[in-house]
Length: 354
Ligand code: NAD
Ligand code: TYD
Image 1 (spheres, rainbow, N blue to C red):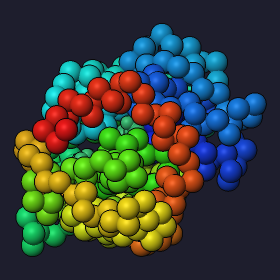
Image 2: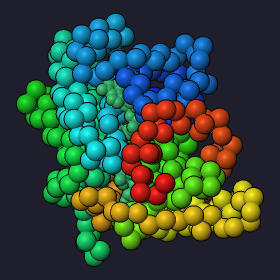
Image 3: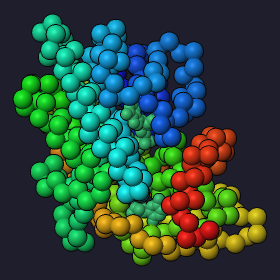
Image 4: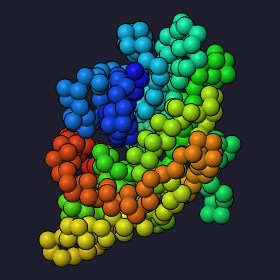
């Protein structure tokens, strides 16, 4: 069995759902169920004895120690984090608490468990830490993509807190021998993505007849990967990644934000034309840029491809079409995540376009 943390969030839930389609190994899913954690995403697993959702904090050492002792997992996959850059700018405290202090507490609980395992299980154990390309900072237009040896130069409270957690994970390996692997992935998109992030926000706002807020000039570049390809990379690294190593994960899909928004609008024009016949791109509104906004991320995933034979299954074109279609097919999921907490956030973050 494996212990997954943050498995009710966007990537963690996709990971758990895919895992249980592909294999029968049990999953204990520890999630605090913050605004970003959504048990509804896991509804199809209700009554499935292979999955147990436990509401709790990775920083709660007593709880984590008890879960580890009770369930004896062979691996921990750590997705749990505060993940939204804009929220980290408005309130960094939670990011320090969960991403740094929480990861520290989790590592200590896991170390206590792991160090008492019999030798064969100790060797086979893995702590897989899920991280982001944002720890590497921002690239200039002509710079080569980030490799695993790029400097760690985080620029936002979010990326700084993730970089700190990556350092802790590294140190727990080098100092205590904990068998860790870390993945640093580019921007994900796909089903069950909370509509505070660019792609789902644009889909939901477009359909709702609302402005499509583009920060600054919209020429910031991100490298996009379909979430299920990220999940397949994590499975592969868990299976065959070398202990103590870092693996970059990316889709070789650099796109400017404005291009992403235009692509989403064009797909919606085709799949769900607006009632008044106006193209959705007419809703694009330029708003004040994010402070300290990273200009470009690009991931070189060749180590993962070379060493472990991983390749993404989706192109950006196929993945974004599936994503837009998923949001059209799941209006109830979207309506339910747009809770009071979500509406408060939107009012605070986008006050200038209301
Ligand atoms: P998310 O915000 O959708 O989900 C995070 C999950 O963690 C939520 O279910 C939340 O309830 C849970 N959580 C938060 N604090 C917790 C705590 N203290 N204890 C237990 N659970 C807690 O995030 P996501 O987009 O699914 O990202 C998952 C991981 O992948 C994060 O570590 C993130 O840094 C990393 N990552 C994300 C992306 C991306 O594009 N979304 C890209 C690369 C890496
Ligand atoms: P986001 O999805 O928040 O991911 P990240 O900041 O982790 O890359 O944002 C992706 C890009 O889209 C980023 O450059 C900021 C930009 N953006 C907008 O232009 N408007 C928006 O309303 C949001 C949420 C993001």
